Image 1 (spheres, rainbow, N blue to C red):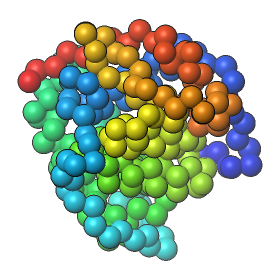
Image 2 (image 1 turned 135 degrees about the vertical axis):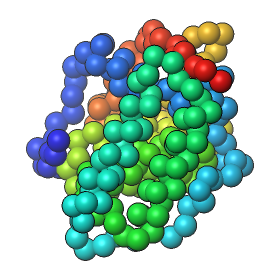
Image 3 (image 1 turned 90 degrees about the vertical axis):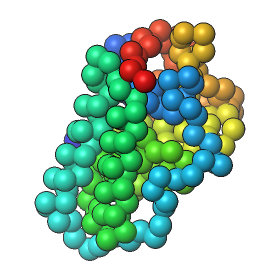
Length: 216
């Protein structure tokens, strides 16, 4: 799971099925389109983002707990039919626990910071996405490879939540029964996307992603 900064090389070849699977996990309850109202900078944070700190050593039990929260977050998005109201409540409960752990300085290891970032990526406001991005960057700097993609995705989600074009091309919206890519800043190159394990823009635009079944 871990890879040092020095040993990283951008991935130039992408498997369509692997990329699609990653994006499916992202867009389910992603805060995009009609499946879930888009989070905006004006929406309240549930819970609010307070002060956070980082201790000097990782408590193994807390690390296990954050890993369990991450697994629950992902499992909730892989069911055949998603109960949106139940998921909204479960997400809020997970975020509240993560915010308390962050306030107590309990997320120290790269894996803990990555898992906390993913929980906040499914937040309700720009401050959640901004904190997810900061945590993903910390995890990335500790050598957590999946944090590269999450860093890009959380940055994109923050920009989209503020009504701006996304930078990397990870965020989709549901339009007329199909997913389409949110507007992307044309200044970002595919070489820069590759640094964060994001596929080329042309591939992202051509994705034919399934629409999740929801029970509202």
